[in-house]
Image (cartoon, rainbow, N blue to C red; front, side):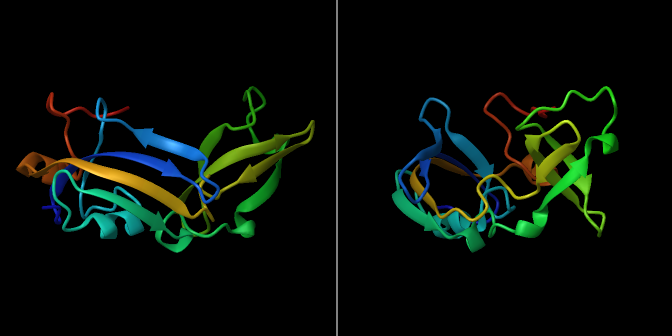
Length: 162
C-alpha cells in the first residue's frame, strides 16, 4: 500500500481540461517516485496515498494542488543587454534566476525582439486543472540509500541525472 517512504511505479496519462494529452508514462517505462517527498504535485500525491498495486484512478488536480495559479507578476521583459553578448537566445529556452528572496525561479523565453527578451517565470502548467488517469504498477518500501538520497533508484541501482 502506498504510504510515506514507498517507492511507487505508475503509468499515467495526463490531460488538461480540454482533453489534450500533456504527458504520459507507459508500462514499458513507468514513472517511479518516492512517496511523501514532494516529487509529484501535492494533489496527486494525496490522492494516491493508500492505493495498492493494480489500482486505477482518475484524479483531477486543481491549480492550487498542482503547479499553482498563473501569476502575471512572473512575466517580465528584460533588455537583451542584460544577457551575455554571445548568448544564443531562442524562444522556449529556460534558465534559472533568483527571486528577491534568493530562491531560484525557472524562466522561459516567450518572445524575442532586437532589443528585448520576454520572460515567464510561471511553470508551463500553472493555472491548469490536471487530469491524471493512473495505474499503480509497483509499490515497495524505499531502501535506506533511497531515503538518504531523497529519491527512488532504478532497477539497475543508483544513477544521478546530470
